[in-house]
Length: 123
Image 1 (cartoon, rainbow, N blue to C red):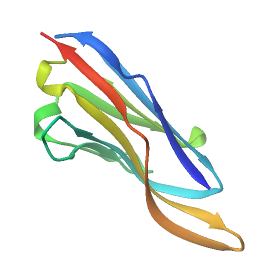
Image 2 (image 1 turned 30 degrees about the vertical axis):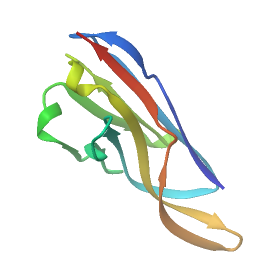
Image 3 (image 1 turned 135 degrees about the vertical axis):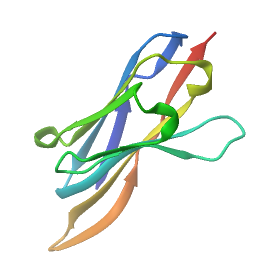
Image 4 (image 1 turned 60 degrees about the vertical axis):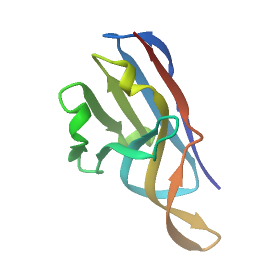
């Protein structure tokens, strides 16, 4: 079994910062892309940022220059530093990972999601 466990959400004032973490655990063989999505009330889930195992990053336009994604491959962990937060960033943030894991004697590749962590930015 594989799990993604997020932490670091909370309530912050506009202009403030937060750091989200997501640790993958279980019978993992390898992790390719890791990243973060978010879903605000009444809106569709949207991509925030991704990072490959080699460190290449991608951000949605609305967070460029404010958010930074990073990862620790040895710990199977991805981070998201959120700076200069505004109320429009309020959402549940979900971690995801494209990974390969052991299933008995086989390996399976799939996308796993975390349970989500709430980020609320007050004005």
